[in-house]
Structure formats: structure tokens, C-alpha cells
Length: 198
Image (cartoon, rainbow, N blue to C red):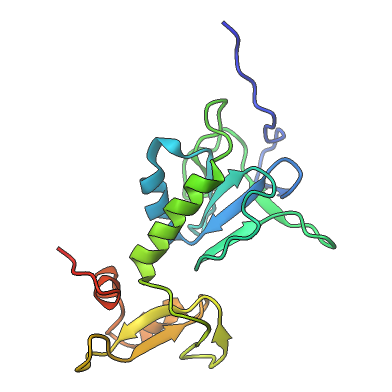
């Protein structure tokens, strides 16, 4: 029986080591709420996943397979033309938090995640968490700047099917719920999208 070997393994290290994206793999970063849901949706079809100490999840994908993605709270780390992008990679033996660790351990059977499946899971998680993406840019309630990643943070009841929607840019979305008690939940997002929660 032949033992499978990985085309890449993290270098031996005693701490998290910054490694360049675009050399062996690209990485896809998802905010904790979207990432956790996507991880659940992928199930056994996920490859190795790094979770940093602040909560975001990082999947390793084939180089160039996720360059055109545009999802809220998702970033692609890839080689850029004039600068390098790095991902903090923990030692292979670090498989438990709260420090940066391999949430799904790296192995010969779990290395890269299929980019198409990952995109599908992240897109579904995005819709479930934030509702339907509005057409075009929206202004953030706090910084008053247009954002390409508008996150609905409040839906006011109105006589029409959907009342006034307040949007935030990703950095300011978490601050909204601390300011006001009414915040958009997944159930409200479903209602905003025209679906009924059960």
C-alpha cells in the first residue's frame, strides 16, 4: 500500500509563521459567522481549515481558483502583482484553540478545498446571515461612505413588504447592535428576503 504525501506541508515551527499566499496555495478568509455556517455546509467535503485566534476561518484552495469572488465578509488571499500577501500558518500539531490552530487538521486526505464547493457554501452562508444582497452600493449608517459589501443591520417595519433598511460596511456592522437594541437577525434577514422562517 502506497502512502500519500502532501505536495506542501508547513515548515517545522514553534509558533505561527507568516507564509506567502500564491506560492503553494491561495487562501479564502471568512468572518466567523459566515465561516462557521459554511464549514457546517461543507461537512466532509472541506479541506484543511485554519482558525485564527480572533475567529475568522481560512481555507486553502488551488492558486487562482478564487480570484473573482465577491461575497460579503469573505476575502481571498492571493499573490498580487506588486506586493505579497501572507497567511499566519500554525504548526501542524496545533489543533485546538483558542490560539490560531488547524480547525480541520491538515492531512494527506484534507489539504485543498474544492473552490466551487467552497464558493457555494460561502454564498449560501452569506445569504442566510445577511439576507439578499441589495443592488449596487449602499451607504454605511456610521461612516456615511458607500460600501460594496452592505450588511443589513436593521429593518424597520413599514406598510409595504419591506420597510426601511439600514446598512453598514463590514467594519461598522458589529458596532450597530451595541448602539441600538434592534438588530437584524438571521430570521429578520429571511423575512427581508421574502422567506418565512419556520
